[in-house]
Amino acid sequence: MFGFIKKGLNKTVEAIKTVAPKKKVKILKDDLENILLEADVEYDLIEIILRELYQDEVTREQLESKLLMTLSYTKYIQPDYEAPFVDLIVGVNGAGKTTTISKLAKHSINDGKSVMLGASDTFRAAAIEQLTQWATKLNIPIVSSQQGHDPSAVAYDAIESAKAKGIDHVIIDTAGRLHTQKNLSEELKKIVRICDKAHMNAPHRKILILDGTQGNSAIAQAKAFNEMIDIDGIIITKLDGTAKGGSIFSIAHALRVPILFVGVGEQPEDLVPFDKYEFVDSLLDAIFISE
Image 1 (tube, rainbow, N blue to C red):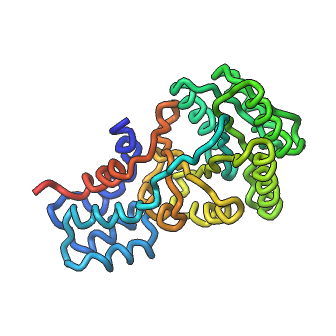
Image 2 (tube, helix red, strand yellow; image 1 turned 120 degrees about the vertical axis):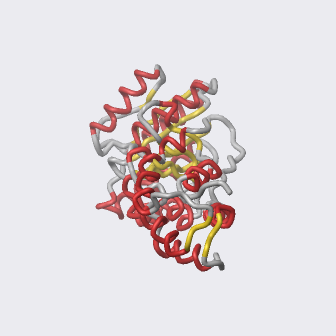
Image 3 (cartoon, rainbow, N blue to C red; image 1 turned 30 degrees about the horizontal axis):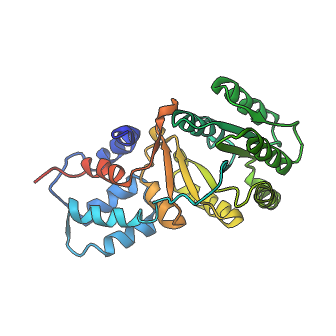
């Protein structure tokens, strides 16, 4: 998978080149501030990074250490569980939830696992239809209901069906309408409770999908979802379509939640596990030359 994250950062690298057209062995802190701002790193985080860099000129190794430190919470440790493993997918409409669910399902299929989908976004008929289309395309079962049906009941039925059929992995979609945040919060909390009733400790992973093109503006959204249900991991979509790749540092630092995958294209293989070392190296390659 090495190289996919670098490919997804092309637009961010191009943005960096507008303020730092020539690579250097060392870079002045003032220039570094402009570069990080251009990559959409949050200003408060930039201040922290610069404050901990004591020299006026910064080397690649010094900056690498500080950037990796902001991503120190990004390692995910899978909990012990009895099959099926249940993923609950949350995020606002338009973030790429449905497409990401299909990519996660494809990952599991490629790993030799059986997958079932649960269409618990019953607020939008289009969401049920889209997820059903993906289930048909991937030739995997789906549990769905009519628009307006209780989303918790759909989640429960999906888990019960997966248990009965010996399915390895259940992926449950949910509605994402932050403009009615109180209703959404209560709905998501109820789904979490009902999942646990259907299968002990489910959902085993609550994943937030964030649109990478929103950059730092996604942080408030992420905090809202985290306060609702304690997010276990984040997937950043559309990284290849934005010059705001540096916002990943800000999101990781603000949430202290693991980043599981990043989306760098439309194909199933374009959802790649997040590698903080490749991510940082890809950005540093745009700034520094080797000594």
